[in-house]
Image (tube, rainbow over all chains, first blue to last red; front, side):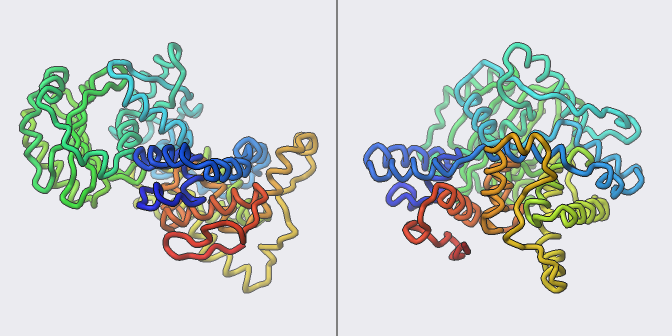
Amino acid sequence: MSSAGTADHPRDEDLVAYLDGELSLSDRQALDQALSDSAPLRQRLELLRQGDRPFRAAFDTLLDQAPMDRLMAALPEPTLSASVIATSNAPAPRPANDWHSIGVAAMLLLTLGIGFAVGFGTSSDQAGKREVALLAELDEMEAELEEAEAAADAAPVVAAKGWRQAVADYQMLFTTESLTPDQGGAAALALASERVGLPLDPATRAASGLQFRRAQLLAFNEKPLVQLAYLGDDGVPVAFCIIASNKPEADTQYEVRNGLGIVHWIIGGYGLMVIGDLPEDRLSRIASDLRKSINL
Amino acid sequence: MEAHLPRLWRYGLSLSRNPSVAEELVQSTCVRALERQAQFRQGTNLRAWLFTILSSIWKNHLRAEKVRTGGGFADPETELVFDGSDSMETNNLFQRVLSEVSELPEAQRQAVMLVYVEEFTYREAAHILEVPIGTIMSRLSAARGKLAGLDPSATPARRTRDGEVEKN
């Protein structure tokens, strides 16, 4: 979404992306400035805003009209593998609403030391869950959901999507420029190491092709979450994140969230992940380097 | 997968503007999803994956078939109007929104459905439709402009970043 033209000559596309909360942080700031400088641009923004509609509410009225009996009939007889697909839906299919994403990211940014919570229910259909060999992934998501539900009573704010999703939402806000000035102070790294209880210094120079730019101490569900931010040689922002975890150990796995690649694993009481818009093999090599650098 | 059926059907309906084609799309999507379940990565977004499959089926098969057989899938006179249920009749605003979206060109309608109704991110919508993000931006911008009553010829940028010219 980042575009060189956003600041100079914002186009309708940029204004709509602005309204939709889809601009990167730097583009949004540039457009804020452009809007404050230009009355015609503000008018154009308001015109485009008039093209908004209660789309979701209007279309939600159609959901009840889906011919479920006939659609269900189209589903093949349940098989073991079909159950896997059905079960993988356990955390309710809450859409990846950009407001929620921004909310999660903003809270990660702003609420050091304050965990966030959640607001949606589990899928009502828990049946059949035990009939499949439950994947570690699902257990983890369930546990996170339960934690999140417990927290929801206190602060029903943001959809719980687990720590990796929260990190992915935050990572989407990063551009090359976000990390261009080196912000890596030794103090932040020392604080992060202390709070998470791991010497992190080796991780700042462990991965070839990555320049360490910054350490940040964030929080997820009231647990310290460390983010080490790097820039790849090609300017791609990459983050290495660590959070305490009581989950069983798990070897590295690859997944994609928000279009970003993630390699994650659990070891020695920590959940770790590497995230960035890089191919799986490259990300896996980086994860391997970083994994070796952490003494677990 | 069951939980996603109504949304898939709604998406199919918005694409085809034809309830029976929408059903056909969902059925084909289910069949293909089960055939290809090995390709689904656990932990990734199942809903997005299913929407990708449905979009692809619509693009590659059904549309071609309907065009060949003159099935009239894209009859511009057909709006998203349903069996006169009370809630629809009494809710003029929502009905108007459905009609307005129904009248958008297909590419814009698809982007509006994915981003504003299904609330996928631009990036997810681009992935589902296998187009660049710039194309999603351009389609949404054109849709908003149209709904706001802006004259397309007066719109400054009619060309997407990847050079595609939006059809109106």
